Length: 91
View 1 (cartoon, rainbow, N blue to C red):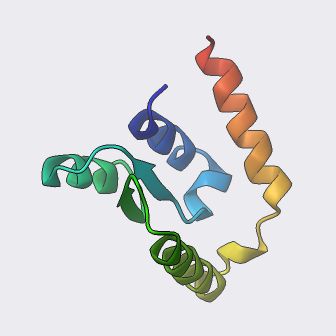
View 2 (cartoon, rainbow, N blue to C red):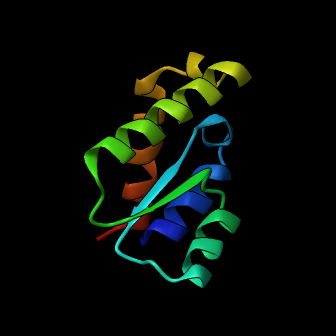
């Protein structure tokens, strides 16, 4: 499962609808950025990332999630959804 498929799968779940998703990818073309955002990503970063920029985007995402109530989601719930999706996708 690639990042686009994972993002779509997460957004299809109740927990995933409230997550702030930063797509971190080796892709950098504008069309790929658009594809990621259309798949449900809130932000998009190309590799390699400047650690300061990554931290700033994570902090912006946390602020956004806090404003919308998404920060109240338990990390373990989101992790369980990711584990379930990975298991469903298979090897």
